Image (cartoon, rainbow over all chains, first blue to last red; front, side, top):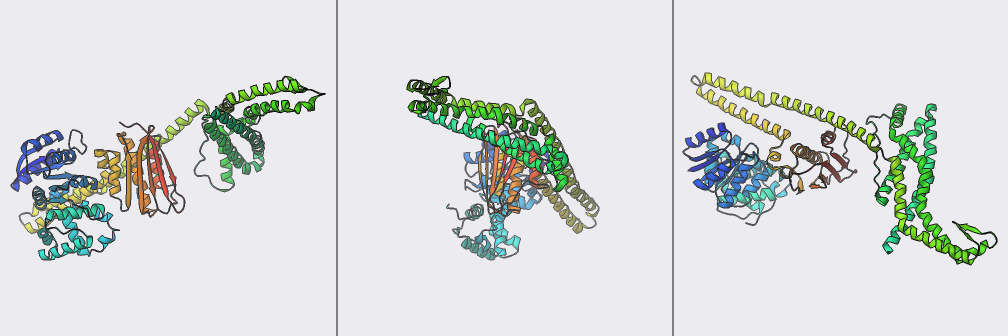
Length: 220
Length: 419
């Protein structure tokens, strides 16, 4: 799998390159600034881009802007955005086009290499990887929402993991239940929230995220 | 023409009102205040002086408002703020009186009262007098001349004693009315210019006050930043630093154990990883408290939007900022909004909050409105008073309107340019 990596701090860039190579990714470009990233994304047509939000020369959200621009130029280009902090505002912008293939994670998540690599693969495959903190912020805003209140604690757990972009199999593994049980919880959640049922995993994730963000089913 | 006449007539009526206020109000207040101050050594004055001076200031402020609204004359106000910690009872009364008597504005007001009661009354009367005297000329012509057949009545320089001289009086009256229509607003303006020459603190005093304010706000700023650095130092020392020490120790033990007891070593590595994750979380919170990353990356508008998204209650944001302010200004504005939001949720129990942020006329403004239970104020020790000091560094101001039962509106203004 071909990866473009953009991270301005040498230590982190180096570490990420080594980690991804250890998991058999091919790093086609490892760059350290916004303009370089834009060029690399245009030239090397990667399967996935792993991008730090803050990049030189402006040290603002240059990485995010480059990633969004690249996705506008090539819709669905898988992008995993990393940051020292997560903001719902940025998550919303990344998800806005509804194309999938988007990830947004805290840099801390690289501590757990297996999970991180899983997230990269998921994004590259057109799926979603949202940081648990984003989901928790969304949920805490929905805490007064009576519909979310209808969910059982277990269903809430399942929804949290689903919103992060995990597959039913991964959720089953994490909660130590069968995949059938997860599927049942999932259909309950969709029924309670009034969301349209879909077989497409990624559509499902996006529907839940949109629900959490806006508090009602979004027409898609 | 009609508009001109009605403007002139309005100026006349206002002049009449001002002259009544000047004669009755200023004279009474002058006498009362002088007596009150004279009785200070006897003790009685201690009780009455603060009330009298307060009445004088209200009276003067009403005239300031009139000057601005009626004649476009701005009269600056320069009363020293009362010290915040004045107690009740006699001791407080003594301090209050002493404070008022030391304020040059008190004496300037007294001088103004005296002049206002005399020259002020006359100057305010001029505009209505032009109309009244003009009308009298016509009344004389219309038949009143008959009363002065034997003993001529001097209408200005016209001795009225018959229909012919009556007509002359009417001609003069017409001239006076014409002058009234033409000049009444200017004459009224003259009165307020006189007011300004006496009430306005003048450039020297304004500069002195400015220096005083700058000294105070600079002091506050230095204090605040020193306090902030102390807090950051303590947080780092007790938080991230301690956690990293723990990580280092764990790794040291791992090094010793890795061959003898791989299972235990693996457990310690997990622990070290958790400690480093905790350290990162603490650093992240710390950074958010110093300078929120979104603020650095996106500027004030998006930082406030991101803040609203973190709120547990429905929060509406409207931003109209064509550019970015300087970083310290953005930061002060951000933390003010953030504190107001926190108050709305924590203390007011608000269910809905609205944030407006805009820049106009060289001033950055923000209002935070909530539907909570109200009763908030900028008081001792509240987070808002700290922010007021922080805004003071930029000549910014903070105002809170929060009647019991709500709604609460926190307004912030900082003069600044956007780039």
